[in-house]
Length: 164
Image (cartoon, rainbow, N blue to C red):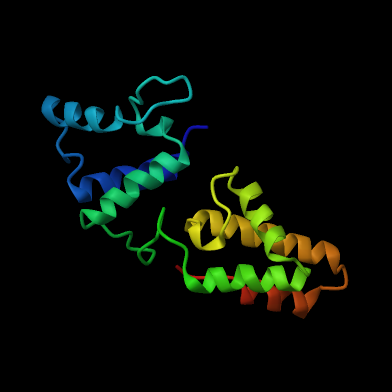
């Protein structure tokens, strides 16, 4: 699915600020820009020729590169796009597993399922994968305890919202 206008706009600003795209549109700067985009492939395996055809994961990769080159989103603190999971998130996953009454092999199975068999230990997850696991476990906890509403649910959500 192509990126929406705001995401394309953010990407263009980031690439210009990081020096990956020149503000003036000369033939050489456009060639450099297209060369950079061509390293990404669409669903058919063809090189990407426009930033609007990037996937969200590809956009995150470019934004991460832009941050490494010095660009910062003025509206947000530095994001961790593909980085390692924090200890707070690992502790949160383990606490949710305890609340669900899971054994270690059950948590391992959940992590494998959520990561398409690529990881089995919460400490091996990326930030995005960790968030998916936490949200899934919160939903399970809510289903197992339908009386969790109002303040209790808010407490659970606040307890497991992590800033990376």
